[in-house]
Amino acid sequence: MKRKYEAMIVLDMKGKEETVEQLVSGIGRDMEQSGAKLEQIDQIGKRKFPYNPRHVESGYFVNFQIEADGPALDSLRAKLKLNENVYQQYYQRR
Image 1 (cartoon, rainbow, N blue to C red):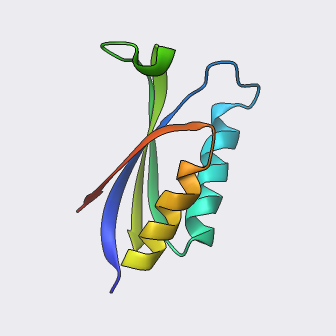
Image 2: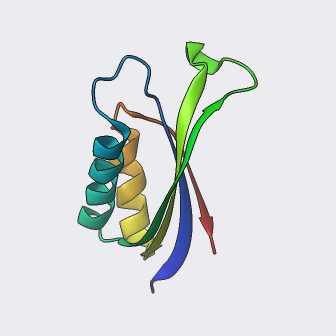
């Protein structure tokens, strides 16, 4: 059963040559390959963290509205966990 989710992805842009657009489109392709359907992408922008976890001062926040079933969401989480540009990922059912 497909459900709607909101995925907040935090990108680590420190020392990266790729542009934000390339990284966001690559993550969108990963989502579609995992079986999720993209509905909307909101680029929130770069934000500073209140403290420096793992020596990272700031991250680029992107909010994805997706529709996926359970196995597709699990596959997506595993795929993005291996992506070195993804700093953190959060999912919430809408």
